[in-house]
Figure 1 (spheres, one colour):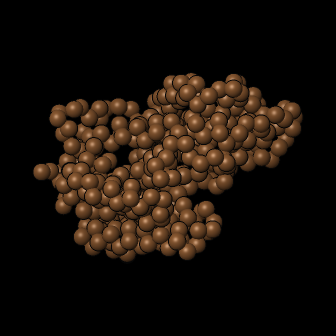
Figure 2 (cartoon, rainbow, N blue to C red):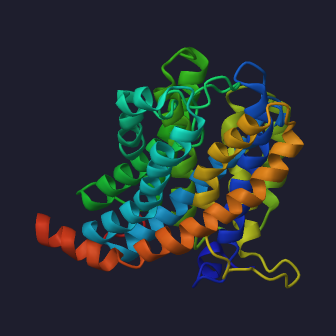
Figure 3 (cartoon, rainbow, N blue to C red):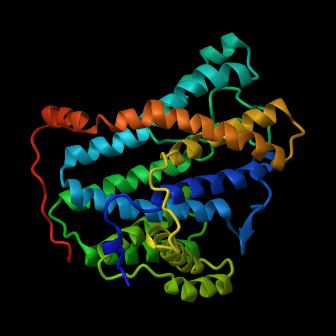
Length: 363
């Protein structure tokens, strides 16, 4: 039986396909949520664990694995910083510009002069590009919809993604130990922190709860990367963790079993032969575009048809989101990523030289 380390060679895997599926899962639940507003319980949930909640955790598990791999392969702070910045920022620049100059003027309830004079309109790109409070879009946007003022409800997770990128880099490029045992300790600390908060300080600010929750999923992905040469490509661990998660109901301690189930299943689907099914590894990576664009598209569809039901919202928004995501990938994201070496060299020239960091992988 192959290990994950043996299977994770080159790009012939289903990771791109899985990310597309996860982004589509978030879209699917949001097609219902956008019509209901914030007061009702999640519509697609098991024991209170919603489809979008599970998908976001899965994204962070995958991200932890891939970021650990990126750090070890590049081992250069400027190349790493360039890669991470170019993965997130160009698409967000496009989204911010579209929000202020496209969606905003058309869907605002304000008069044009009031819209353009509002600080909220011009602060939205700052909020998005600074990974700050993205709960409200440009001034007056979608004012009378169930999620009044919301432009892209998915953007809130990106601040935690950026925090994880920076934290992982600090550990890797500092004298701190790095390797499979370090990752295991980090997973234990973040998981215990989340459980402690959920059990004893459930009223903690959302930023604290979300940081602990998503860092626990992220560090689990790091653990899998660190132990990849020992972990088999097999789903049997999920056969143990899945029933425990289901039996735990909505208890906070169900979360680690959810994440372990997700991780086991994701990496099995990514690397297993599956009776010779193709990996579709050459699919374009539209997942990020789908993730950040689907919600404003849904809000627009609902604005234009106030009586639309979730099925209609999904039927209209799914193809539109894929089209916009394709444009974002082929015109903005992929060309930007192609310049990461030049951008890394620019950062190096501005901020000084860096040497490749060699760290043992077993600490």
